Amino acid sequence: MTTQRSQAITAIGFPAPRAPRDAGGAAITTAERLVALCEELERTDLRPGPVVDAAFGELVRLCCHPPAGCTGAVLERVAAHVDRLRGLSSAGEGLMEQYWADRIAGAADPAAELERFPYLGNYLDLVRLEIAALAAVGLDLPRRVVVLGSGPLPLTGLVLATRHGAEVLHVDRDPIALEAGTSVAGAVGARTGSLVADLSSATLSADLVDEIGRADLVLLGALVGADAAAKEAITTRLAAVAGPGTTLLVRTATGLRTLLYPEVHPADLPGLDVLLEVHPRTDVVNSVLVARAPR
Ligand SMILES: C[S@@+](CC[C@H](N)C(=O)[O-])C[C@H]1O[C@@H](n2cnc3c(N)ncnc32)[C@H](O)[C@@H]1O
Image 1 (cartoon, rainbow, N blue to C red):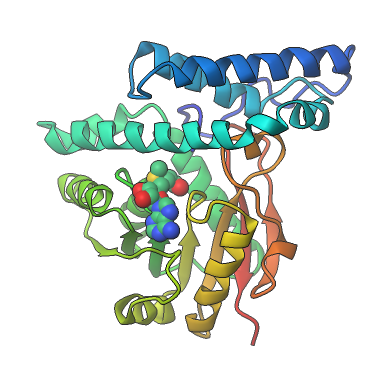
Image 2 (cartoon, helix red, strand yellow):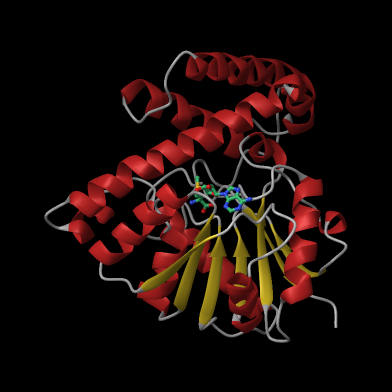
């Protein structure tokens, strides 16, 4: 998930203020506002519209750019609401993606409609950050990419395919989401493959095993695996079938951003060697772990 459109690096008030005058008071106000937004969103159907968009916009902004020095105290105060907030965020993101996928695929000029997607700039930022993270550990641009949990609006794969020439396979357990993603890809002229698979199931299909073994990069979407234990199980299965040249990119979150997405630390992934951990403090919401299967 991302929060704002941009051409270059997106950030609100970046760098964040460093000297809190009243971090305790700010923590109370922030926590109360987060819970109020949670309750407000629960009174809606979460479909895109002025009220839902405004509430999610404020929620994401608060989680990405909280007042300085209050993250720990806010997390303590909202601990009882984490599952509710993550559930709302994940459901809202799915509905927003489906709405925009339908708009783009049904538009007379799909490429122009995609440009109107308010968070396109942030996907560009996120993919650029991920490519830079790969470069930082000495890896070239990936040529074959498998995106796990690609969703109805698979912008990561579309950016990699259309702007970086990668061959991309989108994987999702939801056939409707996958179909929507395939329609968007076709509408904007991207040639991507698709495969229905549930990464939480104990066995991976022969097709998926083959694709993972041949991929340069396997990207585990932030919403695949609800917690660290699920991420461990999924990444252990992926590591077992990864090829010698396969890198895994695991999206995670840190700070208040963990109220939007599950948090996973390198120590939660004993099946992988984690080479690099990147935590943006910009409007890019997700953190990234770059990992390889142990030799
Ligand atoms: C909201 S969407 C897209 C996410 C977002 N665009 C991103 O970059 O992470 C999340 C998708 O993950 C898929 N998903 C969640 N858990 C999964 C699993 N265990 N196996 C496969 N797909 C999964 C859902 O079906 C959904 O379509």
